[in-house]
Image (cartoon, rainbow, N blue to C red; front, side):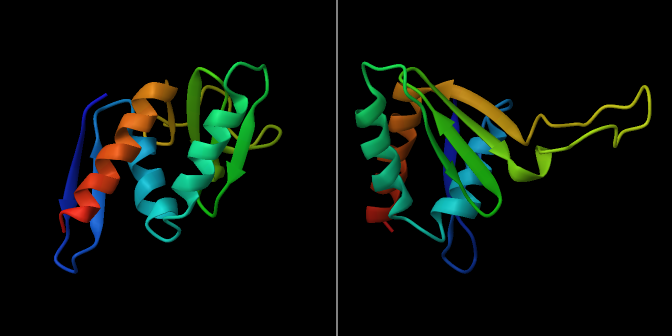
Amino acid sequence: MEYEFLKDITGEVKVRMSMGHEAVGHWFNDEVEKDPELLDKVETAIADVKGSLRQWQHVGKEYTLLLDEEEVMIRANKLSFEGDEMEEGMHYYDEESLSFCGVEDFLAVIIAWRAFLQGR
């Protein structure tokens, strides 16, 4: 999983992720940027589920993060569709709205994000 941290013209930090992991970047940009303490909650949750079959979930304004001992899933809340809303033969493009990664890789992004912020 490759990523890049950027500052926009207002000084706000943006995360750009490699293909297939775009939702992770969107999660940082939309959820963490507004609530940096969320990362502390996620790290605590990762420690709590380690060695168990439990899961932890955080439903944010735009994205939901679900994690277990081995994997992190980030899904756009708008992907929650019910019933037969789509016409037959159609499908949703969700490549940028759903991402999976390993817990260790996700923790590495958290560490790198914090280090980038300290170097502002």
